[in-house]
Length: 242
Image (cartoon, rainbow, N blue to C red; front, side, top):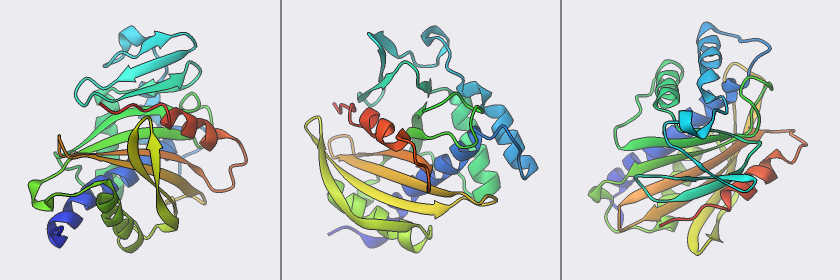
């Protein structure tokens, strides 16, 4: 049995992190105009997400043929992305996400949650909305008891629907990715201050040996007729967990 209060509190943290990251990244590509001073600050500061040579990055991806491979030094998972995508794992961008979440969502990023990396489809600030993939992790409290990925995802769905006012599309479904079971949840919600509706796809994985939950979230916008989501999903399916 999962303790209701402990479970919801823990899942709330990582889900708020998903949304905070998604909201911030939605403005990273805004080069045409910004509707508030806060959005302007976030968009201008997002130049740290330029596609820099690996030697200039905080954590170095490794070039393998026409792809880069990033291996998380703390959690051990790896993800591969094409060379024309844009990667960032810098502490500077995480600080900007935290600032944006605080100023726009009145939310302090809890210490148990960490933003690990970002993969952008296009050069930041080159498009109005930049489709992206990001990874967030949460160190789960023992108060949640013994859970699995499906149970964690069930808690997350409820928070998305009831407290974050997201429209969840269908049931969360199990997917095997490189030998590990993830749960996929598709949802959407309006972006404050814009006419855009964010279309997101979250893949959740829980590692009981580390008591760590992983959230890989893909985001574009409703009405996007490109294949950006499919390309991001192909990147997601390169993830290898330890």
